[in-house]
Image (tube, rainbow, N blue to C red):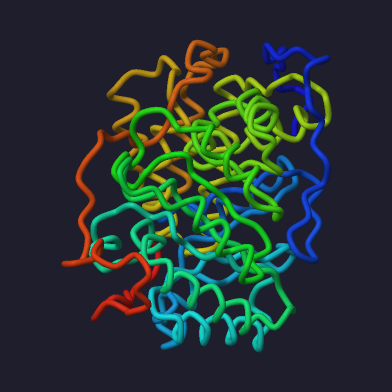
Length: 390
């Protein structure tokens, strides 16, 4: 964004770059094949806007629960707000009951609330999988097909419907190839694959070979997700797997300018933005200001606190300063404390390192008898969540 920002070569061979083509998802054409992954408590309008200011692509809101949407839950209705000029408006739905998912999509289309709907079959957290939702659901091939069909029928060709999934429940129960075939059969416009199982959560290395296998199995767009920490990772993923685009999640936490790096890399310009601390502080204030505009002064500044550690990762500011910045109670206080910091170059030693939460492998919590019949179309009792956001 700012030509004062220091830039350096990203270690990518320009001659080896596979320049990305615009990504088509149904009737949507994205100038950059990049999607911001929906992240609970993160990808609200403020975060989407600040990321969008750096580069094109698709910026998805937080996960919205179908039941809560249909019931017009007050918090959920606030969460599906988009900025006036935000386009395309991308919304991710979670649901387990085909009838409820279909009704939610029908509502979004009838009321013109979204330009794209993504269906969540990738969430690995226990409160979701124990109900048969998220990453657990594709194991039930019959139920998956019913949900996809209901969503596509409800969209009636007016907006594209995509889905995001994981490799499977665990290494013994992989589902991604069957799920991809079912998605294509049912008219899904594209699939995103996180190259981990639900059991892996966010630990270990993402399996990019699974992304390549899915790409060779279906004829609809495939987007790869997992371990994209730098723009060079995205270029390498597309070159190695043949995928049509990338989904970026934890890699952009505290680094919205990553989307500028991605746009540059896909344009054949292997450089990255390396803002000094002073520039990072300006972005932090901008982000906090947008949150306050969206949520109000008190909620907005409190919500921003969780971003402080991500923005300051690698900078030599000391634990006491980090603690102070993580407890600010006003935009003015945040601005003053950041202004007091001495400027310093970007900590290049953190480039390419993981961001956000990491976990070890764990047993996936499933409904009783979930694995007995992979063709089942039964909806688990009490499966639909009544709150949004993961």
